[in-house]
Structure formats: structure tokens, C-alpha cells
Image (cartoon, rainbow, N blue to C red; front, side, top):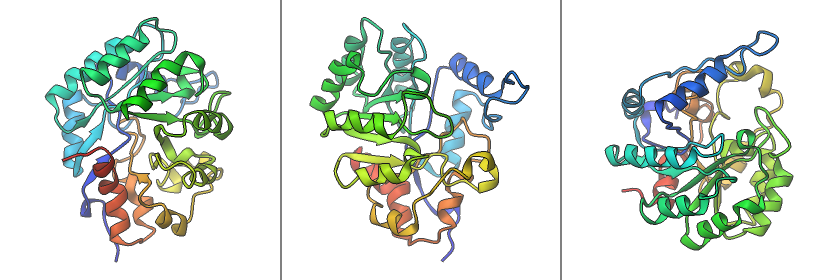
Length: 288
């Protein structure tokens, strides 16, 4: 049976919500030409107001969505977290995640606040932008809080679509071996090294992977797709309880429906799609 995007309900476990002025700065960066006059990455498809972004997700059968954001410099994380808390108060379908900057002197205090007072689910780390290793000693107290409180951490730990010295499988393995009981989501299936990240699922029962920007049509990412060695249907089915749907909305250069197109074209059983699109996130985050 062939399925379409609107045959399912979704919990988008890789959606971003930033304060509007930070969104604008991110979009301007993505769309700015580099030294050769080429775009940095891609044109942003959904440069909308915050409320328009929410309404759009609702129009796509998205029943809940994350607030992933990150701090790109010192002294801004607490502001972003406060903005996120106010956003979540007004949007009950939002799944609140916060951010941290490892050089902030008050980082432990504001992370404790978002966990204890605001009941955020966890934090997002964007190693490619924030430029620190996953096992950075400055993060130890925060990691201990995450483990002790049963919270979550989301890493952009893979080498796709770009890489620096802080990302990659070897750096991540060093980290997870120090924190084997931490609840972790690795974005983008760990691409380009997704097969290595899949192999970690057998060892670490609290590790999950999200699908953001991986199973999109080849022609949208022709310059990168040749580097992707996507797991086959058998592996996807074997780990269907450990995979979470994500889109990377709104920072995508294509229609939202393309975030599910490649997966649906595999023609796997409906149970598989129900699990990764909705059931897994509903279960692990107790979403009602």
C-alpha cells in the first residue's frame, strides 16, 4: 500500500523556534553569499512569523513539536530560554527544550531553573555552531543534572552536511561512554556516519536517532547525497522503536512534505510509520 504525507499524524522531534530577531539572523546567514558568491547553504522555505510557523505545522497534521534552539555566544542562552518558556505557555503543543553556552558563569543555575521551575524536557546542543566537544568538562555539572533528573539532550553530532573538529562519531562515542545512562537523541540519524550511530543502539538503550533532512528526494541534496549511505529497510524495521521523525522546520529549503517523502517511498508497513512519526515520541515524552 502506498501512503501519502497526510495519511499520518506527526510529532515533529526536530522543529526549531527562536526569538524572531535570532531567526532572522540565522536565515540571513544561510542565505548570504560566501566569498565565491554562492549561498552558504540554501534558501529558507518558511520565513514566517512565529504564529504563522505554528499554524503551518498544525496544517501538516503535526500534533506536537519541539522548540529546539541553541546559543551561539555568551550571555544569550538565558534570554532564549525565557523566551521559549513564554512561547510554551501560549502553545500547549510545544515540547520545550532549552539551550546553554558552556562559558556562561550562571549556566548551571539557568539550566536548573528550566528543568525544575519550567519543566523543560532537556537541552539541544549544536556542536557545529557552538564549537565545543561533547565531553567538554565545562558541561559536567549540567550533564549530571540531566542524568539525575531523567532529562534529555539532543546533539547535532554527525558530520553532515558540514563538519568541524567537534562533531563526528569518535567524539560522540567518547562522550556517551562517560554517560551511558543519559537520555540522548542524535539528529539526522548521525549522518554521514549513520551506520556507526545505528550500531550504538544495541549498547545504549536510552539512545534515539531522528530523521531530520535525511530521507528527502535526492535532487534536493545532490551535492551531499552521494556521501549518504542510508540504512536499508531491514535496519529501519529492526530499530523502528528507536527512530523519531524530525523535519528541521522551518530552516529547510523545500516543501515540508518532502521531510516524509523518502521514507514513505520505501513502502514499509503502516505500523513502522505510525511508530516513527508519532508513537515513539508520544511514549518517551509522555505526550497526551
